[in-house]
Length: 117
Image (cartoon, rainbow, N blue to C red; front, side, top):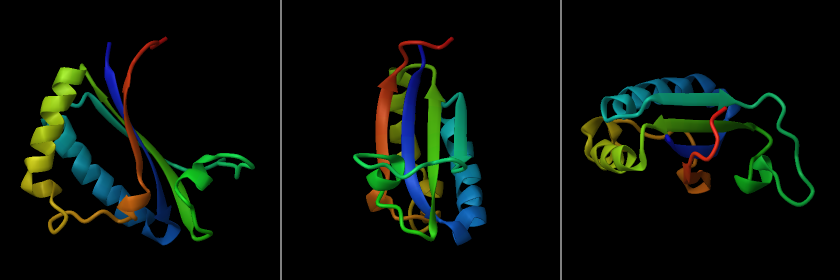
């Protein structure tokens, strides 16, 4: 089954267009190195929680929106190889393509697919 990298971040609402351009350019690189699909979503209904929530997890500020994203890879092996190449690619370096959000508050994880219905 496929392997998924998932991300949650807080992005300034005024940076939505800048974020989308960043996402488009990085999606090209990920797909060149084996990703099957790159999905970026912008918050619509993301409630605050009392114990935990997406906003709490990324310490969202009032002028920010939550972004929920994922990359689909054919396997963990392709993902591991692809990520190494992505990180070495000059188009992904901070001076070439800076992240339009606070990377310190980015939540990231890799997941084995257990159901794809």
